[in-house]
Length: 334
Length: 288
Ligand SMILES: Nc1ncnc2c1ncn2[C@@H]1O[C@H](COP(=O)(O)OP(=O)(O)OP(=O)(O)O)[C@@H](O)[C@H]1O
Ligand SMILES: [Mg+2]
Image (cartoon, rainbow over all chains, first blue to last red):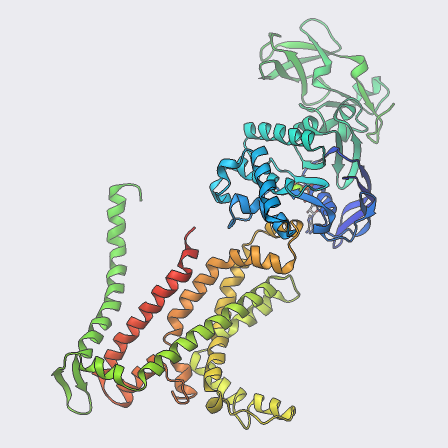
């Protein structure tokens, strides 16, 4: 249960074509993350799968059966919304029990499932409160609770953590990952935060303007970006991309090198530059290097102990096997 | 309003408004109380001094008193039910995206801007007239005998006219409430397997609770005092004499200001009983 296939799915809002023909296969038990810049159609794609929007053409199959025209309730999917979408006039218990009540489930079984979900999600102390009396993280857990009691064949998350503060986000990220491990249910997760994508996903789908740019595991995308868009999008800080003479030397239109794949020295190296801002993260330091003639600014990772200060001259040497080459269309040269 | 100075400044500045409003309320109230204890017959000797509770006793012991209370309550309750139910339906309809939405919304609100006297006259003469009214033509078209609305169905006619007047108000308030409903909540409930009617019952209706309460409370205040519609249609005949109409008759037709004032005090008491009753039932919706 939980296999979802999109076949030539398109979506237009009036004249605006948001999703061009798109094929995607999501396997049972996978944690799939849709990632891409704002407005690229991630939410739209998720809502198409959920059935909250009708596809303009194409087919959606869930567990092998055609679900293109099924209403949302019949698809066996559960969704967690960005705004949580809790029912404000119902207690936490009633919120979580709502889908079960709608399914006319036996009250004793409802009770059992709600209590179980509350226990798993640490909601037992708040079970009789209203959503308005909960913190953001607690509301998020209620929304997840309401999704898990239905035992759906797949979960859909639309940027569930974007309203939370940074530390809570890290916690919830872990909780959702753990939930995925224990339930082993398919999860589709939308985010524009590539750290979330890298840390949680089994499979990342990178979208741009409704097109799938690349599908793969986090490390595949990190090691082998198919084009400059994926290269620049995945990895933090972003990959340095240079065009011009430096790229021509390697027989490419654009070359890319990640900040962590350059060697730093104060004496010799391939490229010379001047140190600008240094961002100290403790374990690592990211230096912004200017006046290299390659790009406005080059980011490079230095170990925490590498001692340079603003205005010093440094030399950069790319690790040859970690250099990415792209042709003039931005596609990777093998 | 944080500092002491700004707090006392605020008090001084709102004082004129408070004093004006108090005077506005208190002067007529005290005058009503004053006259209700006096024999005051403008055309038959004028103010003839104190009579104690005579006016109160006479007002209640009149055979028209209890029927007028019943009529008042019947109108209030029927109009409330009709406007709230139709108001919810209309508000949901108007919330749907449709062609010409702006114009339709203005048209729906329009009846509220028509004066009660005018709208009642229009209803009486153009729709409900037993020979020339639109309804009469309609009835005849289907081969039925036209109803003489103002005499045979006086109460339903009045209720219809007043409901038509107040439906826009209810619709408007409920429409703004519906528009503030988070669309994701509806989508979530749809995914949770709630069909249309259950979505209405479990999500939309609770969301509208507060707005419905406000509609009920505000309308009740005005409906208790419905007057113009009765004056220009039935003139209080055929069982449409409300408490306010009875008071009007006592003061102007019988020229007895003392008796009418006693009726006014009863009207205040009735309004308060209704208010307490309503606050008990729906007031909790106003709390968070
Ligand atoms: N109901 C709609 N009518 C018209 N256009 C829409 C509608 N919904 C979305 N769009 C358009 O479709 C495109 C994709 O929107 P979508 O909400 O899927 O973006 P997103 O990737 O989720 O962005 P974000 O990260 O900001 O949430 C946007 O350009 C948006 O303007
Ligand atoms: Mg979105």
